[in-house]
Image (cartoon, rainbow, N blue to C red; front, side, top):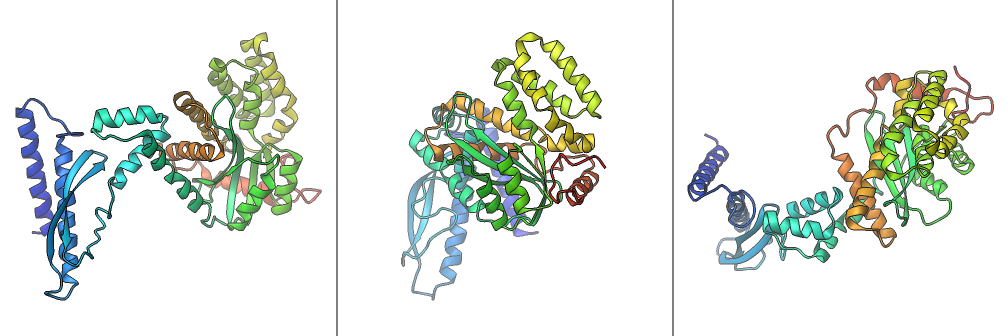
Length: 412
């Protein structure tokens, strides 16, 4: 039998025996002090350390090195604190990978802290949760230091090369909550296989940064963007067509929704945004106008300003009906940007406003990672993605009379 299988069977038997003993003692506890997984984690770590030391000593000349006892170390893990014995060698050259020198936490705990923070727990709530459930004591300063790691990850991600072609790129500016604070520019792409990618985050420290954002994407290898979804300002349109002449610039429904919702009370934002979004996904422009009129009647005079914003932008929205309903649903963002804004508002309610630009970048990136890990992430946004992709490609490669492309192009 495979030795690894024997080890697995032995661990399973030990786990079952320990579970039975806990049940007889009054109850089964998995996590935290005295938890079943805590003792199992201790054994697994110590066995891994022992195997690493054996491998290390085999690499030295016989007689020149050997065991030199072990030192006790308390590790904070995702299943609770664990006291382990870290073996040493006489030469002092043993540097295990299982437990790094001077490490007091395992990476799994850091990932847990980052995940819970991304899902909206404040530092205080997180500290209390770890203490109550896992028996792990962390300070708020340690939690902040752990979550700061994502800034290094974001910087590293910003250096990675991008795909040469993106059928769709969404540009948006997000603010970490309703009560103000620094803006963050976001580029979200849909790749050739239909998957979603975060292309980058940038601090919005200038009045107009979009040309620099587009230049940054081009420097990282982007050669074609078929449809760019943004605020359709002249600066963005000129920067886009100057960088990628065939790009279609399409009005962002997300930006328009935000403008309309500013005139509505917060409790109406969810249902009102759903009604307005249904306007964009109507099969024809006539059907869309009918839906808009019906929604305006149902919401009544108290929301007149929200619908005034929508009607004022109708000439820009109407040009989008050159696309099929499924393509328009995709260009509306699939709700991803709205979910991001909603998550940032929830985090602000729990953790308060961000004090500076660096904190805004961190919070936005954490919120994005939580959305990326949600069920269904990575799946194509359109049911018939090959057909939608071909439709977007044709839109970008159809010559317009001026040589530039925008969603004002005539229907074909």
